[in-house]
Image (cartoon, rainbow, N blue to C red; front, side, top):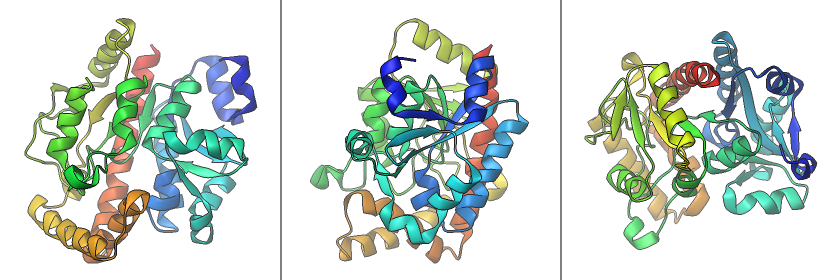
Amino acid sequence: MKPSLNQWLHFSDEVMEAKRTEKPIVALESTIISHGMPYPTNVQTAKEVEAIIRNHGAVPATIAILNGKIHIGLSDENLEWLGCPENRDSITKVSRRDLAFVLAQGQSGATTVAATMICAQLAGIHVFVTGGIGGVHRGAEQTMDISADLNELAQTNVAVVCAGAKSILDIELTLEYMETYGVPVIGYQTTEFPAFYSRTSGFQTNFSLDSPEALASFLHTKWKLGLHGGAVIANPVPEEFAMDAKEIEKVITEALDEAHRKHIRGKDVTPFLLDKIKELTDGKSLETNVALVKNNAHVGALLAVELAK
């Protein structure tokens, strides 16, 4: 680690010990806690996901910005603070654009996929588990609303284990964008790109691999060749928690229409839509969200263990 980074990076004791002993580490984002799920499900899920990673032989490193420091690994108190609904409006959603400003101002914030990738790479962590990546929003040909996650995947050497792209996005254009920038999309035990709440999207992954060993071998080869950038490890939600693709599409359309009527834009769109979809599905979408994150933690931990070898 570069000495100049010490002023911004703060490692938990658990993560510091993992780095010292070269144990596998898995990065986790914090926006899913602050803006992605309601309380107390958000905090409970965060703790359960960390436990899953530990149970598979790796060390969890949930990442957030606290008082102008990038915290790599959080305490239970930190998780509670991030998840508390009273704090939600004061916690900045931090992406690449916001990272330097929030740090320089000594502020606090929750890291998105893009910011978590940046911080993970700074900390020497190459496996990151999340729910779903951002992407090209529907109607982006007019709004130009494209998530910074995609550009980050093109340039930052972190593998992102996810349940595909969030269903609220234009998945076809999201995949096209990643192809343009050379981001490989690997289906884990599937050839079809999952659509977050459902296992199917109607679109194919670039490649399919069936074991953590094969995923680790692919990533090792990619980065040893100097092919910079991340990779999407697309891991479908377990069958028993998956939602019907047609059913969820109707709900998303209704939620998008309401967001349009209320003129909700930018970084406020995704939290609004997730909340609205939960309401319209009587909480079923939240159950699916929790299940897929836990499933991704399982695969991400196994991948990190193999990559460490």
